[in-house]
Length: 309
Image (cartoon, rainbow, N blue to C red; front, side, top):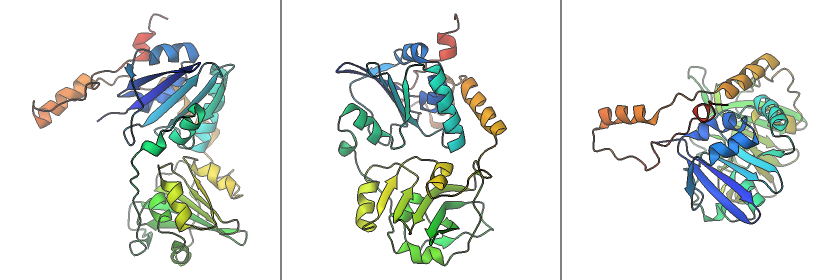
């Protein structure tokens, strides 16, 4: 249990790795503190000898002080393109003189920045979908598992599909296309809609496959199943991928007012979480024999850390 994050501070050839058990969910909020306060915050966390293994790492920040490059990824609050883009614009004004990069490919991007091997050492555990279980969405159900867009002859068709998330469906291979084409044509959803989880785009015209997730080993395996296709995987975002295939997204994007509210919510955050309270509830539910991670009770609150300022 936790929201685990790694922070890498790079100076020269030296790397200092820090670990937080709870603040992966607060990465976007914490980065808005700016260079000095954010660095001070990170240095309150536990030092680590190595990076977390997948799937335990839920966010990562790399600060390269020599190059003044900030590279990070998180999956909690910046999944909508409109919010992410405005957030990054604001972050640039806070981190003056720094190059800001959102790592769409998560640890693939981080390891490239550091010239290290990380993903190759991780366990690959892919879930494959089933053509038999793939079905057209029924309006009697609460939600569908994936929105799929097929582009062919310059036109796109939209499918609401059950039977797996984007990576599972993509791992069925090219033969999934024929079954998808038989499904009802739907409308594109507005950004921020919670009716679907996954996003998969099959651009037959250009033989481009876009899978809106970053999973270790996924891209490599898809190359065997989608021969002669260009495989694109990463935490891109709904609107960003629609633009990639030439869809006019103006009427689909979140309104400026909603984006502003979201950014304000991120900046204000919620730092009232107390791991001790959670521990008491867990003990009451599971008994006193429960064992806690050694970092379970560590939670640095930036509002308390900088309250004198």
